[in-house]
Image 1 (tube, rainbow, N blue to C red):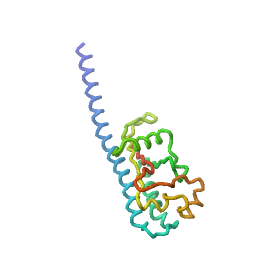
Image 2: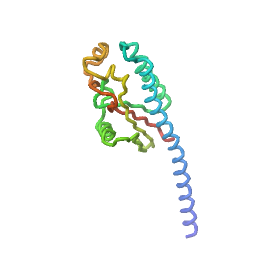
Image 3: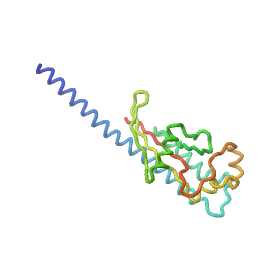
Image 4: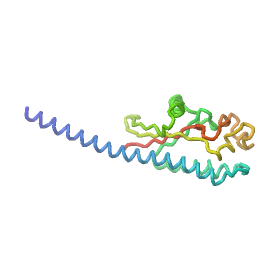
Length: 184
């Protein structure tokens, strides 16, 4: 009986230590995911403000300086082990069409004024992950490509014939970004 109690105590202590270690590692995953989401949102905003002025004619080159640079950074973050996904109901690129779960998150951000992020831990194929989802709001510079349907640059109209990402006003919810990090 004493051995069973001793063994049970050892198992409980080992499980507690493992849980604590997961919590610390989960914290690192959380920091990586949140940091990357904030970085991408801020990068998009600052580049748009830098390259898109009120009288700027948006060209494919301008587009690459803003959205292309963000896309490049997303690829770098992905190569570093993070998963980064942009999603919208009114999407431009069909690859960014919101899934049902993402559409529900978008609705939640619309309903809950001031909601800054939705965070969760989950398992996929037996491995733990942490994800953070944050809203992306339309800024004044965004309206050059996401404002009126007829005001969109010609190269956008040609490149994205099924474009739905127009008709926004400053301050509107444009979509979401989700960054997922493995919990090691």
